[in-house]
Image 1: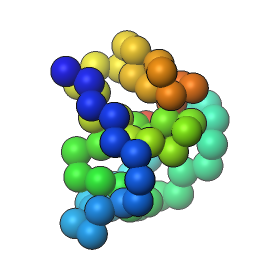
Image 2: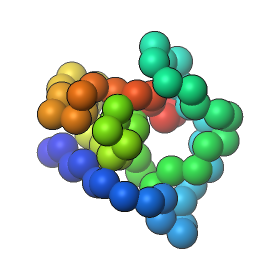
Image 3: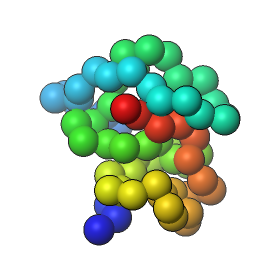
Image 4: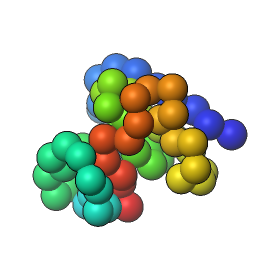
Length: 66
């Protein structure tokens, strides 16, 4: 199941390190919604369980979270 959420980071956001990525700048411990797997290039968040197709309709992955 793939879920994409657009908007501001939730108040209960979990801080986590960013995984290796090829685009964008991801600061260590950047806040993001709990359970988010990636941030898309259109600034939405993906909760995809698998990497394949993540953010495919959102211009691709900006960066991944660990």
